[in-house]
Amino acid sequence: MNKCAFLLFIVFNFSQVTAQDVFQKYQKNPDASYLSVSPKMFEMLGKLSINTGDPKMDGFIEMVKSMKHFRVLSTKNLSIAQDMETWLKYQLAQTDLESVMNISEQEVEVQFCVVYGSDDSRVDRLVMYVSGAQKIADQEGLELSNLDFILLSIEGNIDLEQVAVLTEIIDIPGGNFLKKIN
Image (cartoon, rainbow, N blue to C red; front, top):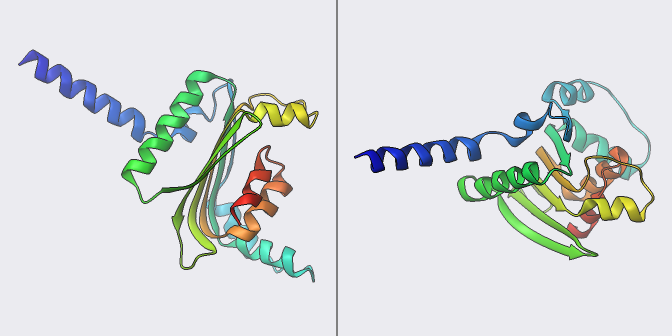
């Protein structure tokens, strides 16, 4: 009986760890960098009437207005990176999130996962996991900390053509890989 109780305890605790939101868990950890744009911020942006006259930029602004959440977690800490990977595996197994592309380039590994939206060019959720991102920063001469592993999660009515523009504006290292999913 004790073995059964111990096994149930282990299974319950593992499911709690994997189900816990990795972004919330590490948002204040000094070994990680965290960025979150809340739904309220996107709601405020949606109330602005902005017209640039540039169709590409106007499309980007419309996509931003329709977003629900934008979160980025990055670290050099291997333990945190393992939790990020565990979270991603859990999301792939337990939600509608589906891995759609993996890229291996110059010792950098990038995995793209999506929840499909209303048509082929839109997704409701995009998750990107990058391993080895520090190599990109070093090649570009960037002095950045907490960068080797990056987890990006975007929720909303996401136009894939505009996501690369978004990552360029926010200047997320590894964002250049998003251009490859179009």
